Picture 1 (tube, rainbow, N blue to C red):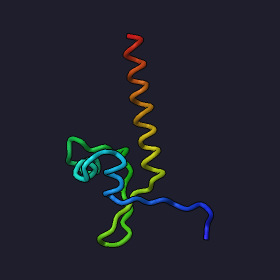
Picture 2: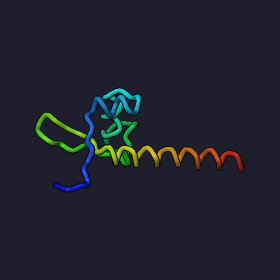
Picture 3: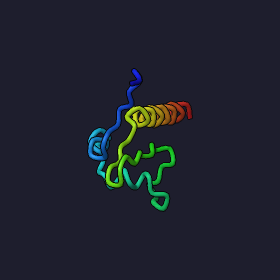
Length: 79
């Protein structure tokens, strides 16, 4: 067994962690949605009825979102 374990989270846990509805999460993944986010982490399909997200990928996505917002805020201060 590898010492590098992968932490996977369920849709419900992801929704709770992001303070979003499960519908909002699926909108991020739906290319036909106006809320589609191509940078949002894709889920892993473990079984036909089970999907999970990599906690590490979700955390990286959040960090990128936060840094983009910080950059936007500082750009507005210099205008």
